[in-house]
Length: 357
Image (tube, rainbow, N blue to C red; front, side, top):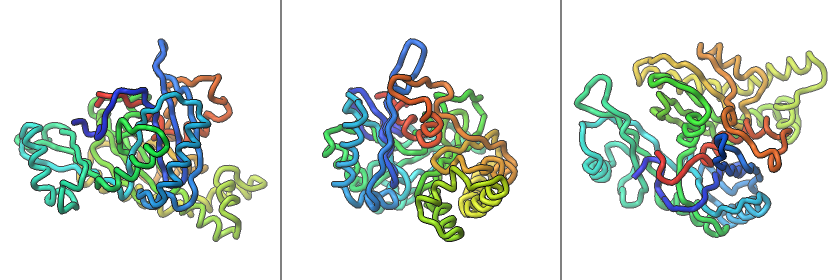
């Protein structure tokens, strides 16, 4: 079984990114000139529907998914969705060389050594062999992905209640990998870091030669910046959100706001720096070519330059539509910048096909 494919089927697939703040749908079709984003929709979730990656209000989630698809015009009922945060564990381990069948049995029988679960019968898990360990050719590096069946079922049940069928259950970090592969050129040993800053969660994904080799999620994200701006300027959440993207009146006021936002983003920047430092220390300090930023809070003015200087790594905004076209009849050109910002995970999910890696 593939690392990214816990559930499979044979229908037309649509990417559904289920965040704690909103749902995003991406339908991608193949054309003679390549992949094309046919439809993209976003809808906000009622507060408290999903908390820390766990579905707290399945009825609200099902109703919102149903509304999203009803308004999208999508005909396909087969869904690719993903897990993130506390609902999924992704861990890299080094083990003796063995066949996949033997490895699966080992993980199941000795899970306590690698994963924080007492009973693997309560867990959906999969793995991908990355290759020989660089320090010891008698060993191999493996990434293990695991999620409690109860957490997986909560998403499946809500999607089923909306009249849809989950065909592939992915992981946010791997959806970003899929999106990166489809849009960017890379060499076998190129290492890049994708940082996806959502409302409640930030995903870190380190990719080498197109394959994820390190992932981390943390719950410091865009809402932290919003709350800090609210406190500093005594404004509502809506006004603080607008300040993040629209600024204040006057050049000096905007410069002051830019600096204030970067100050408010300090906890996120610190965690990103800590994650990169941890990766470097754990993986031998390999050269990192690029850091790519995505997610709703990635376009904060000056954040890319600030991180570039701080990490000493070239940092830029990611473009999930760099090599993917869009249907001009269904997608307003004026919304493309917004889609590029918030759509990375959904587009990665929409690119998945049954039987791919």
